[in-house]
Length: 85
Image (cartoon, rainbow, N blue to C red):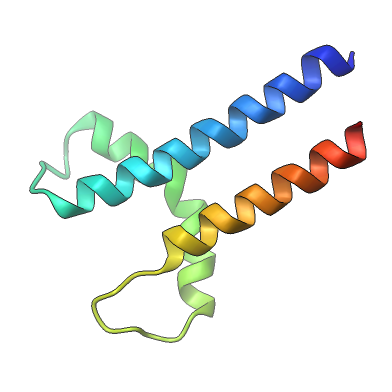
């Protein structure tokens, strides 16, 4: 059972981290916000990023929520995997 759950959790956290990184990269270039791939990235990353943005004070044009989200995801993944092992 552990051989299935641990890799699945690792994959989920990796995919979410890559999605957040992709969203950051997309924000640096001009893309069609109505493109299905962009919409998909927004839909899966916004539930993670929005609460962080709401808790942080305004930093002007800089959005540090992806950095904080990646750090929190990493810590959460380690905690979950430690508990399961």
